[in-house]
Image (cartoon, rainbow, N blue to C red; front, side, top):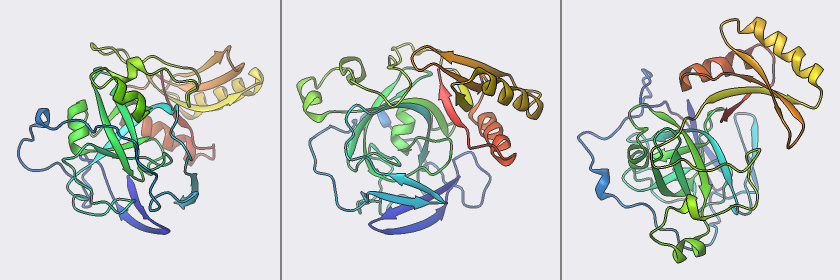
Length: 281
C-alpha cells in the first residue's frame, strides 16, 4: 500500500505497507504490550477547520480528491487500515505530530479536524477518533487509524477490518457524553446507498463485496456480469437490484477476506475495467 502525506500545498510521498506485509518498507506495532483499555477515546469538541491540510482539492497518484466543506451527516462503510511506528513522531497533514498512542485517524476528504465514530462491523466495538491527517491512498481503504484505535477495535492484528465511519456533531455529543453515539445520532442523509444501522454489542454479519458497476439497464449489467464471469471463473458474480434508485449493481462476492478483495479488484482494473469499489452489506 502506498501512503502519501499532504502538508499545505506540498505532497510528501512515502512508501507504506500494512503490518502483515513482507516489504522492506513495512510499518509495525510498537514493541511490548500496550494497555489500550487505559487510553480514552477522543472527546469531540467544536474546533475550527485548520488552514493546513484542507486544500479545496489535491491530486495523488493521478486521482483528484475534493475536500468536503462540512462533515455533517457523513456515513460510509468500507475497509479500515492502520499506521504505527513508521510515522510515529512525524507531521500529519495539518502540521500536528502523529502519535500512534492517541485516538486519531487519516481520511481522504473529511475536513480536518473532524471527529468520527468508527464501528467494527464484525464484533460491534466502537471508538471515537479525531481526523487530523490525509490518507489512506489505497484504492480499497476508507480510513487509516492510529495503532491504538485499531487495537481497541480489534483489527490491529489483521492489519485491516470492515468498519462503519460516522461523523460526530460535537454539540450533540456534549449533550449525551455517556451514550453510544452511533445509536443516538440519526443522519438526515448518507454517503451509502441507504441509511444503515450500526453494529450491535454482539456484532453482526458483514459481507464484503466488490462492485464493478451500476446500471439503469439490466441488459448492460448482464453483459458486464458475463464478461466478469469469464475473467473470474472462481468467483461469484451477481446482479443486485435496488428499488430506491432502480439500478442493477454487478457485484462479486461475498468475498472471504480483504486480501482476496484486493486481488479481485486488481484483476478487474488490470483488464481495462474502471476501478471497482468495496461494498459491505
